[in-house]
Amino acid sequence: MEYCGGSDLNKYLNRKGSKINEARTAEIIDKLSTAVFYLHSYGIAHRDLKPENILMTDNSDLADIKISDFGLSKIIGPGETCLETFGTLVK
Image (cartoon, rainbow, N blue to C red; front, side, top):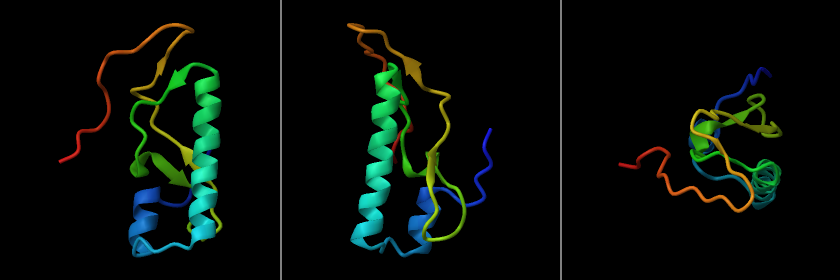
């Protein structure tokens, strides 16, 4: 397992006061969407994607991101549907 020395995306956003520039926001969204597309191309549904499950490789503003916590993930085959509800409940 790869070591990620930074915090998670939630703590990163809190530390920045939820104010990050448009270019950094676009970079994070691009990397997340690319990663989710990759997972889906192999039939993997994460089912608990949230800022706390997105790790930062270090504490810098240029840190890369990694998706973590695949405990609720499921492999869904072609033509198969998933009707189960999973994820973290929001209060």
